Length: 286
Image 1 (cartoon, rainbow, N blue to C red):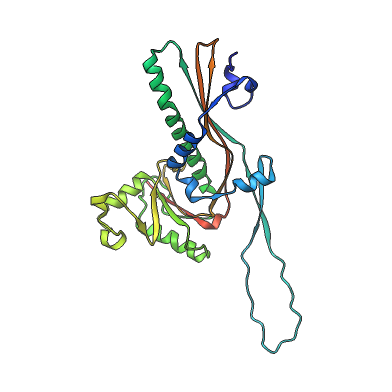
Image 2: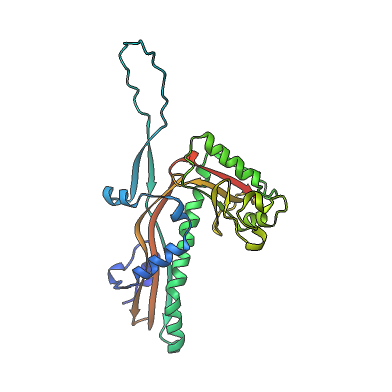
């Protein structure tokens, strides 16, 4: 029997008729190679597995302040209650990439398509995951640069972002700078930046920006654009954004006789959110 359009929509339908072949190990390995957001964000998948359901709630403690006590004091110590808030994340994003390969295709072409389709699907899923993760930038409390769609981001904007994170007591470890292609290559060709000042090698010759301010630099094609047309770059600590994966990336297939072909579907179920708004800075650029 056919799945029908409902079975491919991710909203329900005849899933009980969907008996797949699973290529899970290959698709998951390829997903890991194509995502940046998963590497630099906080993984809460284990907490989701313990809690169950599709909404993850995690308690979050505020920073504390120590006070001075007089050496000769015998006064009773008064405990100060912890200030606690709650981080909540919906794990309800079900992304799919469906394809149908007709039996009418020549055998060689069909084999080629089936041999390549899983790689294309995992890349599409990884790009969607990164796009959804970076969209949480709107929750960050600090931004640098000018959000006008015409002013380029500068190295000073990045350093200002690092300064803001230091002022907010964000740990120096586990930081990363994520640049859009426009900003990344603008930094490489910008004559204001002498390679020896900021990079460990000649950026124009190598095309690489290893670090800025002691922080690793990465490039992502999936960073968002603001309503004003500015590209968003990010300076992040690992706890700025979080995610939980309920169903890892996979590709499944079913031969459908009534349609004389094979339905192939890649899918993944996850949630993303901003865990600590002070642990990241959005840097706008043209």
